[in-house]
Image (cartoon, rainbow, N blue to C red):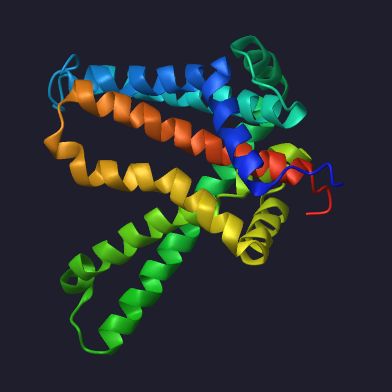
Length: 242
């Protein structure tokens, strides 16, 4: 008999690990701390008088998210059990500088791709006589939004691969993640649906819900995201050649 778990067992295990890992809940708590004060108006309106407190708070929490995320992925890749907050912070200290540099390279690379696509589309539209750059700018808003939504879906395997393999080279990791996207369409579809469906629903309902109801729904969505991440990590651990 094979020692490999079935797909159902792997999915259930990933969900339970996410639910029982205090490290995951630390990340969820940081998210709540980042959005709830803004929604409750604790920083006031986004005017010139209050933009700096909000910006400082947001920047601090973004750094905290990246730090905890680095430790969480590392700790999840090292074991098959629930991950404690202590394990997350211990793991983060060793990998955070490399992870931060990787993220900065990824941001620059993504901006380059988006700008290249925008310039090419603008040139094509101008050549087709659709108007000048100022006229066609509104026509480019939807393609840009589509690219920004598509990017996370394209990279569902990226960070799990990076931390499972401890390989922080941008192009190498992106190439491997995209190959997995093509080779494992069924698993990729499951992970994308699990991770992005709650976010898509929230985008539709956000304006109709009060902050106290919206926040627990977001927490559930983040649990789904980390269930998907853990599923990818465990699948990659069982397949060193992937």
